[in-house]
Image (cartoon, rainbow, N blue to C red; front, side, top):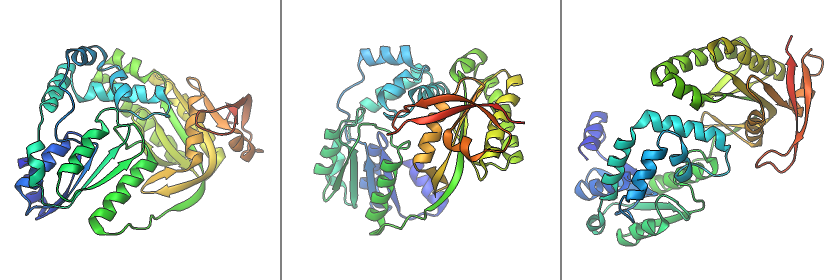
Length: 354
């Protein structure tokens, strides 16, 4: 609470709306009850007043055995229905870079001992409680308990079972919209532009293995050189970086031929670094929204990239058809049923970019 007050004072904020997620909820509850003059409203997501169980010996052994591999977070917190191999690598890196197994156990033990139930009747600020009905980490009964015991609280139950929601655009937009309406009384109309673009995804193959071999410092240095190489090629081929995905990039191009040449160039130029990059491309209509991309074309490009081998660039038939006459050569990979897509997508490997 002292940290919150210090940040508010530094920012010149007399009153603020608090958004408490998971174990951030109890602290937000206590702040709102202790300093009602400084809490304008309270929004809680996937949170609790007291966890449903203490940290067990079995859970401690699981953390000690799995932390750093990505399996612990992947099984408990990460989204279903997304490429597991990609998220496993990202979860592994997150685990290694965030805390040691002993620190995680200490934090989990402290969190399991939180009990803010006695604070709930003292909450006198407008409160919104949001919880996913199948939350695997914090059961929905804990969210229902909050709403039932905070005077005048509004309760909203959301679909889904994943504790984290930042990778799911639909649920993210829903949470943002509900929060905005709760705090302001209305929802702003989203500023959405739809454009035709070629979407490129790149990914370092076996990044978790390489990171383990090199150690965090050398791996970070290697990632920096990789990122520099990718950004140089994006500038060369007039690509627009959308986001850095940790061990890869998402970018867009207004010309599919330049996109193909950029992806192939990246795969070639990172080889001397001792890493292999795979990439995938698809052209379609995308939504430019909140400095991000959305739409089925983005999902197709991600799935196409997942089909590429180390050092390979794979494109959809849409891209291949659009670059006819460019001199680019391809090898037919046939039609594939890609995860989450209703129809098969015809794929091609890039052979020659001269």
